[in-house]
Length: 111
Image (cartoon, rainbow, N blue to C red):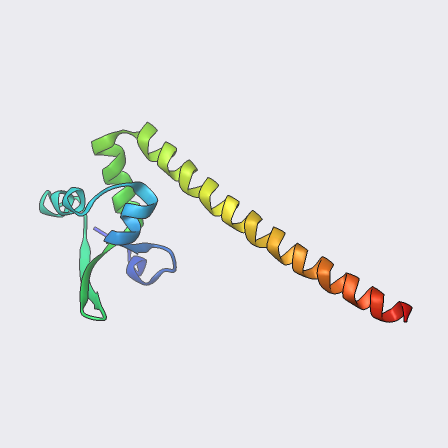
């Protein structure tokens, strides 16, 4: 069972779609876990599209049991690497914007 307040904690829940992106598990795998009593869930819908809301801790534990701890750690590392690469790309873009603006200001000051 979930800890008190775990459903309300930021980052403690995720949708089945996010689980597929972050952990590479499909909806059938999640439904199998729900039927086995390993995963708690809540149903939701956005713009008429239904989704399952899961507890991240339970999903990680279920993945480790079914697919192995190595698979879980590998997928988590890949997800973290993807986030880091995205952040680096955003920072490079912002740096280029700032350098361009700096050059414009320096040109204006020379006149």
